[in-house]
Length: 341
Length: 290
Image (cartoon, rainbow over the protein chains, first blue to last red):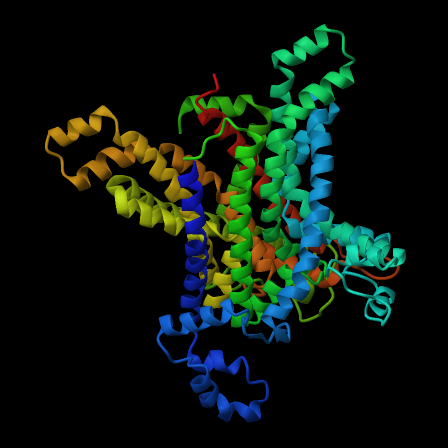
């Protein structure tokens, strides 16, 4: 057991290094002139290209360049991102809390409604909640996130004016960038509460609804599916029969006995999905113009902003690898019968 | 395909629906040149442009399903987009499967250091969400159709490598392999004539059912502007063109519904068909099932 964790921990940096090196290697397909020209905005300065190439050693051997990038990255310097118009490290600091906030709200929705629908469909097997759950679980896997996002925008923003895209309204923008508003955590939902600004809190939450509902889609379908089968299995267990036999009311049998046990796989799954959501945010944040890591990554990719792309990939790889490790840990904690070799 | 499997699919209503959907799209893809005759014979995937007017036109007699921004015909786009979806899906899955077969097969056959190295390589690819990795690779290679397929293949092969490795490891231990070895068969012969044919059947099924997922990821890349270029008969690209029109006008907020619903519906039904079929196959292949 101990050996497994030591091995996993040693492999972590290797995997992250592997990803970033592969991507770094790909950037070498672009000529040094091209990579340098990303930083030259004014055509009159094109003469300075050679100087930029020499200063940053863009003609060096790939390993040497990678080592330099890595050395800088370890010191917290990820370079300058032209697409975000700020250093990559600062962009991460600014955008990451917004994405985590979005993922958290999404996960709350997914777990709450997923558990409810999954459990209901197992209890009322082959009745309408079950039919609904099956439709959701098949449809959720098949409907592209960007189609759902655009349809929701059309209906709830265009037609009904209930929610709007972006992260907050102009009024909120004025408040949070004003003198009286203190930034404690970087998470707007939390900061607005700490500042006692209920209007800001409501506004930010309102802007989170559409992206969160859209982002739910895939994870929701999976969670409903898992909860349903897990609940069906739990309901067929002997302890449920015993609970019924000793005359407990049905809701207690279903929620206290079967439900609690059926939740175990769902909780670990939710942990994994939280990290998986990072992939989905790429599209959702682009559609809803939500200023988070996903949109930053897309803009960097579209504009071939190499420092931005590398920084974004590094962050995603680190988060993803840590998340996977954590979910393995969760598995063994939730179910001691599981042994990792 | 096994007759027994076909029978089981037809007996179940949902899997039958999946089969019908996939079959329907396959027919559209096959008959695309008849259903929507190409104007530009050299590149039928290039959408014909009726004019350079920007505003989308509603479905009518001239354009059955309407036109999208810059007068690209949606009917033509959906029909040829189906063909392109099959082309992308089949090419990418096939290539990824072949790479996975070689890598996973080599890992299982040689074992030891080779196994460890190759499997850590798959870990590297798995370390980033596939859409994000494909997006970054496509951006670096330069956005066009061919590079998008390369990027999709690059993120798809590791899962097949793992699958193949597991299956070959299981088959490797069986008696007939030892028998072949005792009869004097060489390494290559054992690998290609004995191991591979006996190990890959489930993987082939799983891989072919991934076509829906590959098409979905491809559409996402095109939507982000990192795949097919504007004017290509690609579903994701068509939806990207709808982005400016989701709000409609002040009087008719849903005026341009068709720009999203037509290509979006096509992707949805296509992927739905493959998913329904996939669920049926997974049930059938699951040995625990009676």
